[in-house]
Image 1 (cartoon, rainbow, N blue to C red):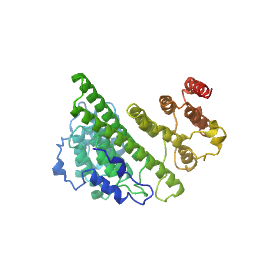
Image 2: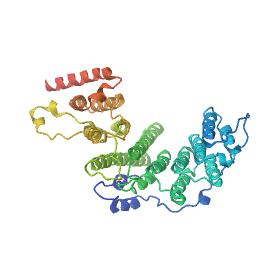
Image 3: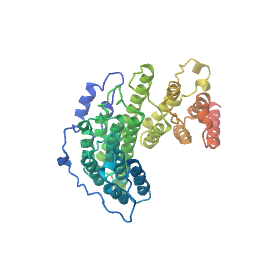
Image 4: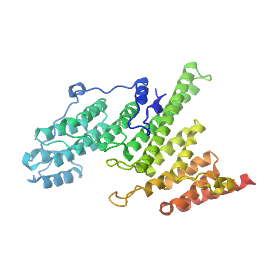
Length: 423
């Protein structure tokens, strides 16, 4: 199913996603996106509540109404909060209030009520905003309806009908729907349609969703592999030909999906570096945070038991992000090129003003994952080079680690192994 998934990813050397990628998408048999009407994916829209469990004072100001709604909704009485809005005269309402209604229903995964809120909002003459569609798409992601994915696609495709240009936040919300519904092929297909530059170019959140989706699919396939292997082993002493074929197919899918994850990481790294060297006026620079690194490293740990060669690719990503100091390799290491770590490059290129606080690029879990991978792969020298690079380039991040002293036993073990191997 996923044999050629990695081939459909974007090439950062081209202006747009290449035509060859589109051919690969067709070869994968991915469903093409067509215009879908709401009638084709009809979901029952339950009426919104109009009566409250107790009597509330009805605000006569949009701002006060929004405050009242949030106060009642956050007290655990969402239906009462919505009923207050329904009882309020239209002139005392606002798009902000209705966005809050839709958002609260979305958080609860109540897609039918969220859609009804969308209908009531438009009936009262309020124009939807980007926030409206982000909330609706979130409702689709959290809903257990078998039509939620189709509804999400319909909603996203209809944004332009309201005179709104879909934002990258709206797009990321659609990707989150695919991620939660395990529609990895649709996610990749949509991702391949993003432009290279501009306000809708991939963001940190876009890549994080992509990495998370690939990792979830890998975990699902690994769980299926374990279940099939266990059932085959318990049913009979000799594995049947059918079971062997199924196990082989699952392993192929795992390898392909993991390669897609690694390929998508390289796409991200190349895109981040390009935005530094070739900045565009309307394109935001990419960030890097510890969370996305952990997603990839956890996937490497997950596949390591199945295929060591795949799992150890995580060490290459560690070197790319944080660097592996060459000082432990003697005179020969001094001749090696010293590429700046990606995390360091992104931090140095970050604008001084207006960008807000930088996301953390390192935490204790990242260190544990790197040390764990080095230990499994018997790469004590790389573990020490990783730590030395942190001491050299990421002093502030290293000092902020909550469990810095707890990493000392692992470092001592790596040093002991290195000394023993040399002797």
